[in-house]
Amino acid sequence: MSDTEWEELVGKLTLHAHSKLKKLYWRGVSYANGGAVPGAPNAQDFAAEAIEAFLDGTRKWDKAQQPDFLQFLLGAVDSKISHLVESAENRKSRRIDTAKTDDEPAYKLRARRKRPDEIVIDAEERLRTREAVISELGGDELAKSLFECIEAGITKPAEIAEYLGLDVSDVNNAQKRLRRAADKAFVKLGIERSRK
Image (cartoon, rainbow, N blue to C red):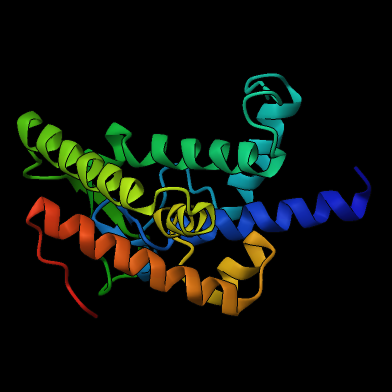
């Protein structure tokens, strides 16, 4: 790859990581409101770590199973972010407000966390819903790609279009198909979908 291609790849990975980070809570505070990621990595750090994991062989790319190199690296970014979200430091500590002092925010242990059975039920419900939507999409690969972008926190049509290399109009049409498929899936599952 040329230097320009590497820069473009790092840019896409950084954008992807930032889109994911801003949707998450870190030590009980949203990233957008200053939630500190354990170890303080930023979006560029996640992009660099994903590339480093490939280069040093920590994550091996199987071209036969996943021919798209970018998708492989995006998966590495997702994995690293997910690992930190689930880390004990992130789950068990909460930020203490120090707005009245010049001190940096401090952290304390969180009082209550979900019971294991609640976590399992939530995960199973998310998986069941996801599978139902994917099933309704059938062979609509573009709508499936759109769904994966949304799951990754990339939600703006212009960002999705850039990421997938499409026109915004194609993304808008795929969004309509995805909404219809989600509505059908939710009806079958008995879920009432919020319309925002």
